[in-house]
Amino acid sequence: MKSISQELRNYAYDLVIFYQKNKTIDINEIHNDDLDKFCSLIINNDLTFGNEILGSDNDAFDSNILPALINYLKNSSDKCNETLFLDNVKGGIRSYLHHNMVILLNNALEDFIYNSQIEAA
Image 1 (cartoon, rainbow, N blue to C red):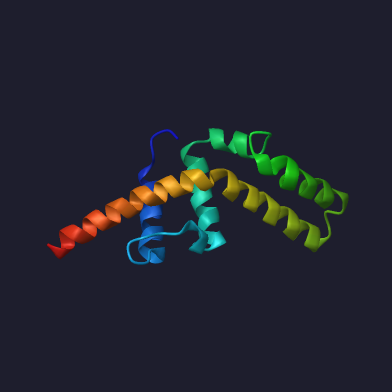
Image 2 (tube, one colour; image 1 turned 90 degrees about the vertical axis):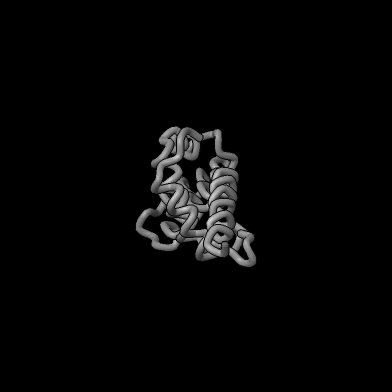
């Protein structure tokens, strides 16, 4: 990942403040809506992820995203198809960026712990 924007750093830190327990963070405990926003900030920070996510670089593309797209396009007026498609796209994006989110969260957690120690002193 190229240099990290202050907005992305701040959001990761905010997630740590909200979701950390005993100075640990588990990405699986973070609500999908928050992870989706986190993904959007990561993509906005490095637009090359946008190309990778919606192509063959993403393992979820062939197994989840593309089949959901084809099913949705067969009947785009069906709200269930639309919801299934969006869920598969967002899930595929979260899966692809999982490693990046963990790194950013761990960095933010280190900052949080450091700041907590300074405040306690």
